[in-house]
Length: 271
Length: 276
Image 1 (spheres, one colour):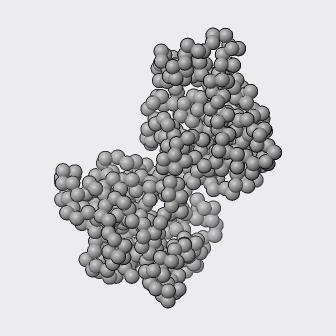
Image 2: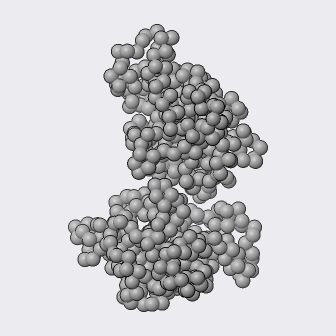
Image 3: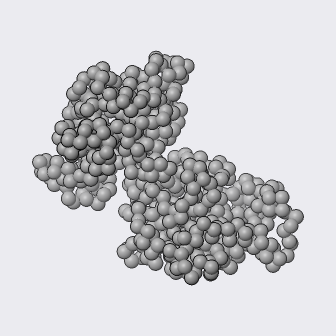
């Protein structure tokens, strides 16, 4: 893994990057890479009891605490939650963010994930993939000289095509850190997501018990990549270590942006 | 035919782009559902104010609304337009919010719309807008003026022939042969479409008879081939749902594909929800 690698992960909401790739972000950070987790919306609608400015401020604080635990930076764009569209203004913000971070690798959702904000943020990042190189686009912000590698977070949708991983990262050693980072996002993990899933009553009051709830709530998600892609794990880590992997995070290479070989790609990712 | 254990009639909302789309692609199923006690609403996202060779604007929109109401009466369903100009549907926040409110107000258990690769841009964007509403109908802070749905509806696609990026795949099929007379009459009520605009566009305006009775027979000839053609390629799923003996008896069928957004149901559960 390159020590001076610069990584930007672009999710739709505060908690998306953390959920999909928090462990990989932490491993990269521990290895000396510079990692920025960006949310395209301020998360001001995803709650049953609070909303607007107060919710956005709370989400911003949570993302900041979460980033500190992972050893990464946090950036939140002030777009309203649930209202992302592939506009030029939004695209320019994304181009500037990628350029300002001087990114070597950019992550985003796939354009067929479940939430329209996920789909449109993905489309906008894809749209930025070539334009980050074009100096006359956003001339206020220095164009990148080298096209970054663009990667997708995983999801389970299959139309028009399903997620096919190109790289997998053993997350077992940093899973506690990932869980701690999610535990700080209490408006999401202990309020909104259990509520929309009709499990609010199962959330314990006690902080120690709460984190156990979080682990069981996300159990399937946390285990999914390791369970679904054992062959890729074995290829990257060898049979002996692969057998010990309990948690993994997988990513797919986007066709836009720089196209590294599998070997080059794996070299960039933490092992 | 009730909605998953809630012990109330099934609420179905069919969201087409234009006045006649819901009727054309799913009128038979809508009529069978209505006969079985389901509450069905057909929505036209546009008011249909552009699709005509010699009329247009508000006058045409009013005519289309009157035709759609008559057609809905024949099918036993209700009707609503979201009043967007014909040919101008775009995936805007305004259009999305109108769709979210329509789905919520109907307390829909099933939402049916176009695929996002159908032939007309209004169809494609209607499909996209409905897909975008699929999660958000549950989120109370979105359109807080209209109570959110507590249960995510099942979202389905109407049939089309387009192959890229992927073809339509039927998850459920309905034998609409018994409802065909109602469907023909519901289309017959939409005269500005069936006897003016569509024949004109196909350069067949001169073939349309003037007497109402002959006109209906002409319409059956004009569209019957296409409607009967929908059965082709559905033999396997018709056999599965109706049995092998039945295939030859199904003259007209309407098929639907499950959308990945919204509630995901097993094939058994899905078939339970649809009229048979």
